[in-house]
Image (tube, rainbow, N blue to C red; front, side, top):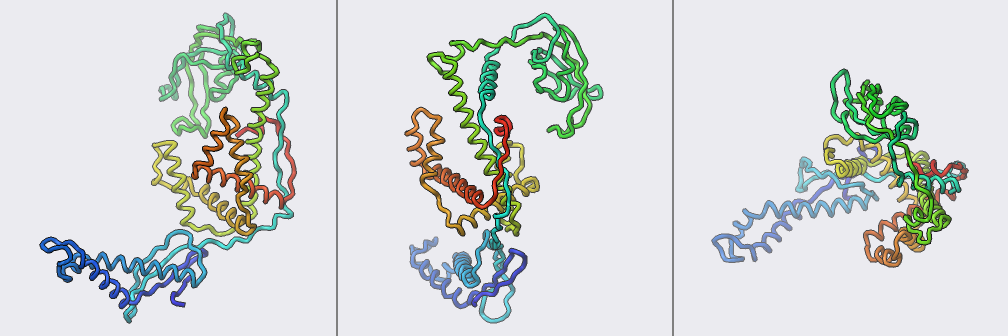
Length: 427
């Protein structure tokens, strides 16, 4: 073998590369001669500058180019000789010469791990199931009525499910804190909108009442300056309102696109939408359960370079959501998720290769049709996906993941966990 391999860690390798100095010099000389025939140098006509002048201006750059190209070829040759699959780019460094006419370099890099697929035959996996019931449809109808409710004022003490209009000033140790003061805030008592038992302390209040509400911010409250602190709020109740729901008459039904005002037709449409939402939620839960199972059943070393790159990707995504995040400050918060993603990516790639799983065009078509179902012109949406290579690739990847999920489920023992609709669609 022309390259020497060293194992420097579980996945770390180092190739020692040698370049004959004579070969480097020959290629540098050839390129200098070629360049001299066309080089433009101040004070000389094109291609007429002395070779010594061209060498002085360009030799260093040409030498770097030659050495870089020869090293790349030698590195690829070494990978083939030792049957290595590098994970990431190598760190190439010059090494001290040991006599002779060779230039010595080391190429340090990581390799992909050898993955032994677990035997899933004796593994049991619980998957959720749920159905849309009449009660679920009626709950949705009730929410739709509440969205269109009116809130007339009443001259009585506030009860649960009433809405109160309040002003408040919050203090901690007698000092007002940022964000703790507001005016004309509508709060439905019992909705859980405010922290702790804030809302319960307003039960029985009437318009014009002033109350002192005492609460403790949760220890995990997002604002560190408030987390775990005791606070009190000077609250002024400006109005008490009770809900007035609209009747489920023809006018109400027509507001949701049912032109003939048929309430049963609206219920049927709601059921269809709830079933679509449930199907999506169950698919998401099924995939999550399978991925968690694969992660638990397999243990192998991960290339640090891939985890580091994925952590950087997650940090930049966090910055896009919140510009205040510095993606270069600290990768620690992203490393666990990055490692999980890299591990699953390597696992899924291994399964795909070993089992010869290829994207099923019928699945891709079904997925695109499912995504187009909510549009009036479904054919236009379908054609758009097929005309956009990047978007089509995304759908193909989704379909392939579903095929991989099916493969795993064909290997394990599946049990059913029956959930309510609300529990199944909860994030």
